[in-house]
Image (cartoon, rainbow, N blue to C red; front, side, top):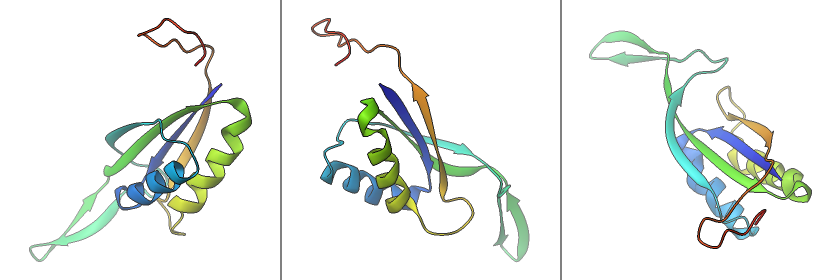
Length: 109
């Protein structure tokens, strides 16, 4: 199993979520986070003055999938999150050694 962890622009999240659901990937953990990558923030004009916001809002989506589904999930996220600009997001794939369902004690479900 693998955990696919991605960081997205908030405005793309609903489209990514809907696309994943349509393809059968409905289980996910979603967290509002803030951070920055290569873009190092953005400059805004506020009340006639310029200000730099270097920590931006993002959405973190974590999905645990079978090894055979990793490439499909990556393709879905990449296609549905893409805008074509710096800050589109990042995807990380992390090995998951074991999962246990608390209610039943089943392993690797």
